[in-house]
Amino acid sequence: MPFSFLLAIALVLTLTLNVEAQDKPIKVMFYNVENLFDIADDSLTDDDEFTPGGRKHWTNKRLGRKLNGIYKVIMAAGDYDPPQLIGLAEVENSEVLDMLISYTPLKAFGYQHIHFDSDDRRGIDVALLYRVDFFQPVTENVIEVMFPFEPGTKTRNILHVKGCFADSVTLNVFVNHWPSRYGGVNASEQKRIYAAETLFNYLESFFCEEDISDENILIMGDFNDEPQDISLEILSNSKKIETFECPLLYNLFFKSMPKQPGTIKYQSSWFVFDQIIVSRSLVNGRKGLKVDGGMEIFAPDFLLVDDERNMGKKTFRTYMGPRYIGGVSDHLPVMVNLKFVDE
View 1 (cartoon, one colour):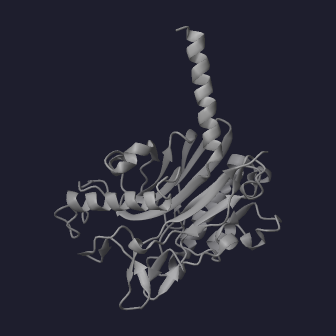
View 2: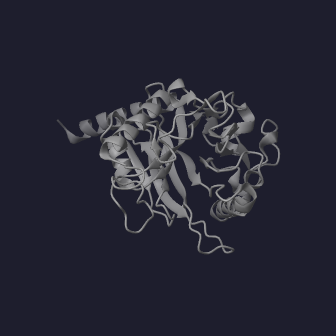
């Protein structure tokens, strides 16, 4: 068979796959999976409790159950066509990501992962999973968050991945896990504000301020603050989301106001710590992609249990203190759909 004929067939198949990809919505998901550790002791990090002899008695059996639980969440979130892009927080290393995408039924969907180790004390990082039939990474960077006012404190890097859909439409994805509220909201607030400023300064230097709104940018993560808090207001003033005025970035929480009261529950209160923020171009569709609806908090029944102490429901987490519960995470995932549009 002539080579030219084979080349023509390959070209037709490629174009067909691209058309099919463009006909499908792009599902994007963020999920803090709560301490996805392997069972080995890393001498460079404080992960001792997540070992078989540690305080949590973390074993291969428990790890396997958690990986299968995460797989189930991802499949359910995509209605059995799992999201093309998944940001994750609280993963220890590339090994557990390999287990997730290679040793669960997710293997059938051709996921790859992008992950860099950070200087976080416990060794937990952020990562991005992507389906290679839809998304092709072009560049991968990490943004270090370092506190000049507290140089001994280490936290997670911010992950930046730029990639292409259908060979042409680009998307810049930023995966975040900002400092926790450990020690008190007010005492820790400065660190989250600094993380927000670090990210925004990077956006300005990478894109130039006047171009931020014209790039396809999607920022997702566990920010450990709510949409109305100072740190998130640094990134966006999204209450004007329908007017297309002023803000370079929009918090999609304000576009939909999800029915689920929050993504994490502390005592009797729900908080929306997990959010998705987008650039103006993803709101108006000027660069080939457009947000289709608002941010959804994914809260199926199997991720919730009765809250006997505080009433209502709470997340079905893996541990309650040192006690093994057997759930998936103390957070609920958040999602958004994107669609292709003519520029």
